[in-house]
Length: 146
Image (cartoon, rainbow, N blue to C red; front, top):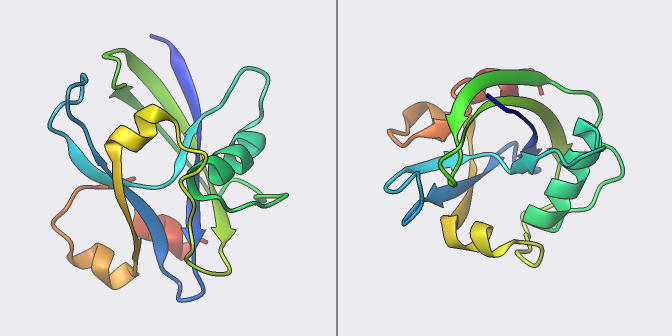
């Protein structure tokens, strides 16, 4: 099984809410799945987790930073990609403090535009109360360390 390294971001606004994107899959190997997840994505060849986090933040949110600091959490698990390939996902999480809530979709790929249907800034209280699927499953714990 191939290992897929990914950088994920805990983007926190001035109100201490975390940014999540809603993913709704139709017509791919994850058809029918509907969940909320942090911004982020795969580490490219020759790229560090930190560099991938900076690039993914800009691509998915339009927010630009020069540094994401050190990894605050790591998650390793088996997952299926929209292509149908099953991989060992190794995710490193980084915290970014956003000055506001304005986002840009200008850097989105066509695939992202198809599955990332909305975004929301979530409070810890909302995360505790929601019945929706939110990834990572230890997000509230991670936010406590942020």
